[in-house]
Length: 143
Image (cartoon, rainbow, N blue to C red; front, side, top):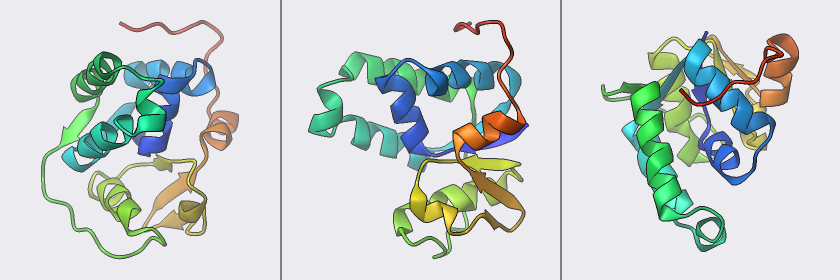
C-alpha cells in the first residue's frame, strides 16, 4: 500500500515504544511510504523543540531521519500546495499524498479529520488503519 504519514506519527514512534513504533518498522518493510524534503525539515524542527529534544537525542533524531530517507520514497518534485487544511502547515501533506497517488494519509491531527478524504486520499488515524489492516502476529524488527 502507498502511505503518507504525518510527522506527528514519526515523532510518536521515536518517543515511545508501542504500536506506532512497531507499525513503522512493519510499514518500512511491507508498504511504500512517501516523504518530502518539507517533512524532513519539519522533523528536524519539531525534533529540536525543547520538550521533544529532552526525550530524543540529536543522534537518535539524525538516525531516524536517515532511516526514513533510506526506507521511504523521497518525493523530489515540487508539490502543488493549495490552501485546504485548517492548519496551513498541513497542506503539504495533502499535496504529497495527491502527487504520489497514495492510498492513505495517516495522522493524529484532529484538524485533518474534518476532511475525511480529499481528492481520493483517505485520511485516518493509525488505529483505524490497523483495524482494517492489522499488523501480523510476528514481531517486526529493524532490518
